[in-house]
Structures are given as structure tokens and as C-alpha cells.
Amino acid sequence: MVIEVVVLTGAGISAESGLATFRGDDGLWENHRVEDVATPEAFVRDPELVQRFYNQRRQQLLNPEIAPNPAHVALAELQRAKPGKVFIVTQNIDDLHERAGAEVRHMHGELLNIRCMACVQIQRTSHDVDETTQCSYCGVQGQMRPDIVWFGEMPYFMGEIEHALAQAEQFVAIGTSGLVYPAAGFVAQAKDYGARCVEINLEPTAVSSIFDQGYYGAASEEVPRWVETLL
Ligand code: OAD
Image 1 (cartoon, protein in one colour):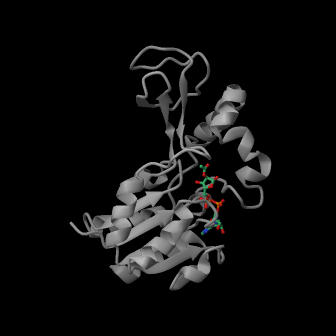
Image 2 (image 1 turned 90 degrees about the vertical axis):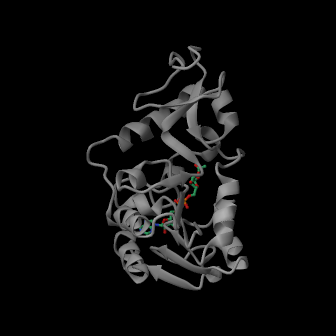
């Protein structure tokens, strides 16, 4: 099956669901330093602080008020309408795409996954994690970390993403600031491979000039509008 559309999503698609973005007013990186909570060095230095940060994010995600919005739903519909032809990659660690019914690749990991540093197995969790948490595979205690790709670590699925970008007729970036690589470089790659590139965001971003077209407004309105053009 040849992939027709590659969709890249970022924190902006989940903003209207009630999850803070990273760089917006009152965004996560306004209130926390990346170097304190989102690097392997931070975890070595102060594991408790890092676990607390992700425990809070996880509990917030599991709050019953947090739900997918029309942007997540429209992408799931697009994927259903074109089986095997819509590849969605997200930088988000929430599970709102899945809750809307889409299949996505989480290049920065998942908040509901934790990884054992002793046996490297990944397990699902909805609970807080600390130094007493035991790996359900190898039984070792105190070696569980969030399965999040931190700054300085290699994102997941890079081979698969590259393969999809090479095939796509259309690439769309939704709700991402275009400041964090390698994701910020996907538009240039897609363009080199011949895809038409569309940006959907509240406002133009650091990489807007590379896109062929922009839909500027709230994702909950602009994503369904863009999806309609494909169906
Ligand atoms: P950012 O916080 O950098 O950017 C969010 C983008 O969403 C901005 O360009 C906003 O304009 C846009 N936005 C906000 N609300 C929107 C809405 N309702 N509709 C449409 N667009 C909206 O988030 P990301 O680009 O996802 O990585 O950040 C990339 C990575 O940096 C994250 O995955 C995370 C972070 O550090 C790690 O933690 C490894």
C-alpha cells in the first residue's frame, strides 16, 4: 500500500482538549526548565523531580474532562476513509489520537508507557511511578523511567517516518512550532521528495515559508476543513 498523506502533529492539536502546549503563554516550558525535567542528565541528577513532572502530566491526561477534540476526530476519519494511506506521526505523548480512533506513531514516546532500564521492556501504566515501582517483567525495583524521548535521545520510528515521507503526495504539519528537530525538518524532506506541504496552526511558525499552503486558526476548525478537501 502506498502512503498518500503524512500527518505530523504537535502540542497545538491537543490544546483545545485542555492540555498545555510547551512554548505558549503558560506553556510547560514557561513553568519548567527543559534541563530540569526533560533530559537524561536531569533524571540522573533528580529522578524524583522528573518522575513528579511526568506523574502530574499522566494524572492530568487521565482526568475525565480531557477528551479528543474535532481535530483528532477528523484525522481518525481521514485514516478510516483511506485505509493504509494515511500515516500519522505525533510528537505528542498523550493518547488523544488513539481515543479518537486513529493509529499513530509516537516519535517522542508515550506518557502511559514506562520502560525498565534493567530489562528494557515497556509496560503500560496509569499510576504514579517512583523509586519503589517494580518492573512487571523482570521484577527489579527502582529502574522504571517514563518512556519519553528526552532531549539528547533518539526519537522513535525514524526509519518508518522517512519511508512514509518519501512516498507521500501531501504532508501536513498541525499545531507544531517547527522549533524541535528532527520533526521540524520533515517539511523540507517531504518537499524534497515532491510532496505538497500544508501547515495548520494558530499562526505562522518558524518554518512556514517552506509550506505551499497554510490554514491559520484553531485546529478544531481548520483540521476538519482541510480533511474535507481530501474526502
Ligand atoms: P510547541 O508548544 O512548541 O508549539 C505548539 C504549536 O501549536 C504552536 O506553534 C502554536 O501556535 C500551536 N497551537 C496552539 N494552540 C493551537 C490550536 N488550538 N490550534 C492550532 N495550533 C495551535 O509544541 P510542539 O511543536 O509540539 O518534546 O513541541 C515539539 C516538542 O518540543 C515536543 O514534542 C516536546 C517539546 O519540548 C519533548 O519533550 C521531547
